[in-house]
Structures are given as structure tokens and as C-alpha cells.
Image 1 (cartoon, rainbow, N blue to C red):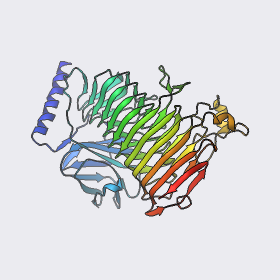
Image 2: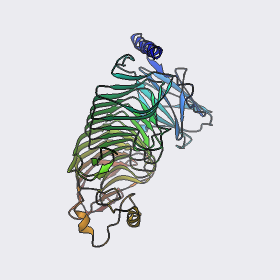
Image 3: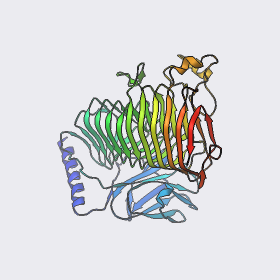
Image 4: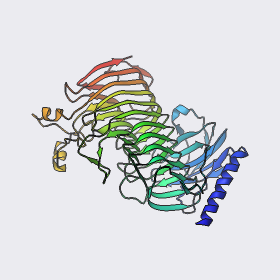
Length: 483
């Protein structure tokens, strides 16, 4: 243990000294047992960077400042290259099986060859770290580079930092309950491959939380889950998860949140806002109201949504009075394989209001662009008691998880329905791919979608100023305006 601490301190001193001598590039050698991708090689300024293998991609990590040249060698013949988000506008040159481009600022990129996105390479180019914690700090759980750590379930306590150094792999889950001033940081990898179920990171009733810089792969379920938390900052996070139900960031009854500069690829909702009464034993929902939700800002994130779920979601479980003051700004949705790019699915009692989507670019969303709906669902508090009955009433159509209301029971379920109102879509651009459709649908005349403003919505460069032009289905929705 003493020797391990000494090694960690030595590495920490080397990292600090490198910044003192104006080091502009830091790469992270992986543990010997890490799975290396066989089909990609990456070099930064001629220096090899380890490329991790994942079931749905390959990915590499490094940190830098200034200008670097990235060289990628593939086992495939290259005839076309797309670097997403396309908004970054990075020129790329390629010949035979090699491509080259330069970076002048941090970026999180998907490199896709020959028009296919079944096996992309992700290049995660992070800013240089600041305030790297010391390995001998008693309030730091420090995992040094070059090793694999099987931690089982790691529990964080108040005033503790979990630091995963670049080149370290931590396998296991992380939990915290009623903790204050906690952080999960670093440039290393949190790996859920060996887990078969559950949430990978579960924080309940925590305050002053920071999650920064790490990469998470292969979560068995919901990936980063914040339940009834307050004052949260999530930035520079990368997620590469592919198993069914692997929500990216779940904000359940959680308020005062800032999420920015993240790359999220998951096989369910990537960022999702919910509210339900948390069972203190299972951390799933139980009867009773959840906490109201307010003050959430999401900025400059890159989103890739696999077939389950939606890109940026509010819902389905909204068992509180109000969900309000939420904004999504300057984000790139590079692939939304199915579901909606931007969605509010109100399956319960809440009034969802004062939500802003601004400067959002959607590159590939073949199914739905916008989906605002109040409905009865298999996740609702008043859902049928048995799975058999839920299956019988399952509505096959534009939504997943929505139930048909039996004739004569509309008023019965109306008492558990909420509202959606005062929603703004500003500077939304579908830049490529198919022309998706959208839905604005209330439950009935008393539980409507109200006051929705579309300002400078464009699809394939064409301004959209009517529901017909935008392929928008409207039912029990009023106050829709186009500018």
C-alpha cells in the first residue's frame, strides 16, 4: 500500500511538473490488460495514443492545449470521411487507409468512414487538467494510471473526491447517499462491463456534486443517476454505452444543474429529467409525490442516441407539481437512431413549463424531431397493475410505452394527467438525413400542450413556418406560433 502511494505521488508530481514546463500534450498509456481496438490506430503529433475497443465503437483519450495534428490509420480502405459534429467544420485529408486533421481546441468527435456509422472512432480531446488532487490527500480516492481496479461497489462520503487518473480503469459501481461536496473526476475510465444490472453511478440526496472528465463505458442500466440532488455540475463527461436501457444522465427530482461539454452515446434517453418518490431501499419509484424540478441548463453537448429512448428528454415519470426553467442550448445531436431528438413525455401529474431549446443542430434523426405529449403510459402512476394488462393496452404507433385508454375511462385517468406549456424552440436546424415528423399532443381539452413557439426552425435549409410544412401532427394543442 505504501509503495502504491509512492508511485501515485510520483506520477502526480510528474503531471504537475509537465504543466510547469508548458507541456501541451498529455497521453495516457492504458493497462496491459485493456482491450485494444484492432481496426484503428491514433497518433497525436506523431505520438501513439491507445485506442480502446468497445462493442459499438473504438475511442481514444488525450489532453492538450494549442494545436495538435491527429493521424488515424484504419484497417479499411477509406473513400469518404465524416467528422461529427459537422458544426465544428474540421478539414480532413485522407488517402488509402490514413486520415489527418488538426485540432486547435478541445473537441469530442465521431469519425465515420465510407458513409457508415456502425463502427465509428471517437476522439476525445480534452483540455489540460487543473487542480489535480494529490494521491496522499486523505479525502481523495485516487486510482493511479496504468492499472485496472476491481472495486465492487464504491461508496463516496461527504467531502470526498474519486479521482480516476488518465490510463486507469475502474471496474464497478459508485454510490453516495446524503453526501455533501463530492466529486468524480479525472481522465480515466469507469467500466461497467462486468455488471449485469443496476445503476452504474447512483447519487441520492447529495448536494454540491461535480462529475468531470472521465469516460464511462458499458453501463448495465441507467448510467449516471442523480436522485433528489441539488447543485450539480457535470462537464467533460464521455459515455459510450450500448446495452438496452442505458440512460445517460438521469436527473430525478434534481435541481440547480449545469451540464456542459459532454459526449453521450447511450441506448436510451441520453439526458432525461424525471421526478418520482424514491424508495430508500431500492432507489426505484414508490407511491407518493416526487420533488419539483427547476433550474437545469444543458450546453454544448454532443448526443448520439441508439434505438431506445430519446435524445434530450423530459419524462415519462413526472410525479410532482412543476418541472420548469430548463434550457438546452448549443447542442449537436449527431445520430438519433429512433425516437425523438427533443421530447417532453408527460405521463403523470406535473405541469411542465418554461422550457427552452436554443441553437440545436440535428444531423440525423430519421424518426421524430420534436415530440411533446401528455398521455397515459406504462410508466404512469395510475398504470394497470399487471404486465398482462399493460401489454393488452399497449398502443402500437408513434410512441413507445404509451397505453390506449379504454372507452369510458378517459375521465378516470384524466385526474392523473398534467400539462405542457410555454415551450420555445429557437434556432433549431435539421441539417442532414431524412425529414423527420413531429408531434404536439395533449391528453384532452383540459390537459393540453399550450403556447409553443417555433422561431427560426429550419429543415434541410428550408425555413418552417407552419405545421404542414414541418410535418407536425397536432391534437389537443393550442397557442402554436411560427416565426
